[in-house]
Length: 345
Image (tube, rainbow, N blue to C red; front, side):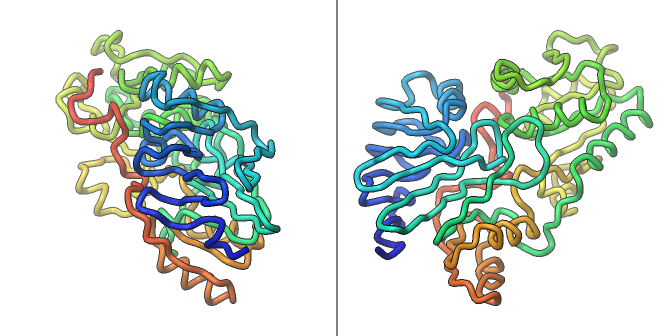
């Protein structure tokens, strides 16, 4: 069996003809396997959805309980037979519930990574390299310039600024699913034991993380705080809220943004960010290359990101590689549902 007989590109996304399913389709399909809950991978309207229990719960929170005709939970590592193929879900380390999807048939195994990272994250299960014949990797930060610093050093920079400016609130832009909760957990690891304030758009998903046993300490919603309490506080909000009317309630805030894109100084300047924090939930260049070496695949397919540089790197090491040029997928800079301008606090 050729790899393209097992998985091929269609207008809806990756399609497995022997199994009759799509992986992270960009439009409604009869059967979808979903890697994680971010909106560019997990959409409503499919006939049937197979995903981890946490991803299904996240989709229910975001889209309502009727987001698909039917749902099925996939336990990590469990072999599930669909048509003529076997599929397994393996940890991706991206956000809570995220998984790679391994598809096997005729002695061939293809692993679709979805989004993943290799850096430390106390809020989700770490990435697990899975040996395969073909590895489909994301490449959001697939350029050598993107080498993320230790995330704990970035958190220490944030706390140093809090100590330096105790009279100013520190407003940190972070995406609602995964990044916000990870940042709070890292603040706790670094010894910050005061309340962390959150924008109302983050409340539902943060409560979900808490319900799954993720220790985030004391969380307060901003609307319950007065101006005096917000001086010197750390406030986590959607990136769009940094420049929204909502932000005007803060006393001379320090604006920060937690994103891998903060490596690019021009992006920080464009957003008016005073304290850029390079905190990413995607693998950087070194971790992309390391992962490709670890899985041992002879063929690499590269998708949604900086595809060409990684394809060239693979070719220079004797690996077959191709860009997929798939459309409909965002990157770390996407705006998630509920994070639009003017979202309720």
